[in-house]
Length: 321
Ligand code: NAP
Ligand code: GLV
Image (cartoon, rainbow, N blue to C red; front, side, top):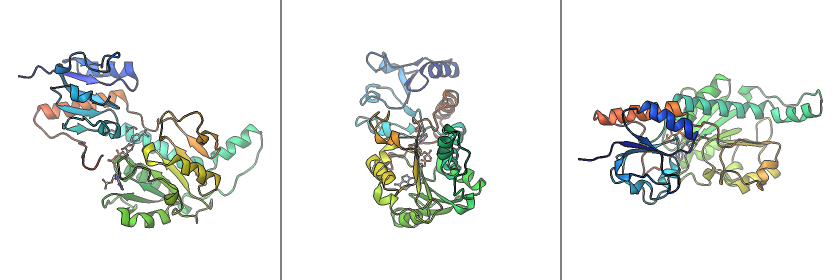
């Protein structure tokens, strides 16, 4: 008989709130954090479930009675990077609040560029009353979304409601109402050639590593009202080549960018990305997991598992997401 009865929770986001929220949700069993000095559980044999974000390599393998690994977020790239990751079910976080936050961030970024907000901010600082043109109508622009999963398809629907034309690209064929869909490497160029504003909501995998590079940017539509495309990345920084983004902003291959994720986080202070007026940067906050809904998601999945039902939102390790 296993003596495992505890949940181990990484304290990566909102440490106090998160631990308190999990303790409230799981009042019937111990909820513990890794020992801050060792980064490991003090009683590893008692850990039955682990909720992690960027676990130390080997930490999960040190838990002999672990049964399920939960990701603190939607993305699991930092967990899959552990070469000693135990072969156990890995459940990622899918949550309406998280999806809503990402939709709001994406819509905000699209409008920041299309309504020329950075230009108006600069005029305001100079107390100058002037219009900036062009101010294209939504239906003059096509937003192309890379990744039509939980987040990408919800963002597509939100942008359609604002009148934008929306197309999307995914690994396998997808159908989203009123979205023109493309899939696979063979249809990537066709998707790019239609896209004035590119939104990436791709996971970081070996197939998407560095995909947002100069070669791809040069294939985006130049026929839009700004004469050069906009790139918005809310997925993962490992999918972008920042040296190419900087060069393409310098050369006007890109009209502007919005980035929430970076090759190195925090973005180093000496990155030139900080210096562009038409580069809108946010510190990986587009859709931060809410401790309350995260705890109830973990509760739902543990209850399902203990009743002998299938787990939801399982990661397919061979795909990497
Ligand atoms: P998801 O439901 O798994 O969707 C992923 C989408 O990407 C799917 O449509 C998938 O295609 C597509 N895809 C994956 N690999 C591809 C490839 N090689 N070529 C073309 N398409 C590919 O994931 P999600 O919940 O929408 O989340 C997406 C990502 O957003 C996460 O992995 C995470 O990295 C990021 N994220 C960021 C934040 C933030 O705060 N910035 C917050 C949450 C999530 P198929 O549909 O064919 O499988
Ligand atoms: C955040 O980046 C997430 O993957 O949930």
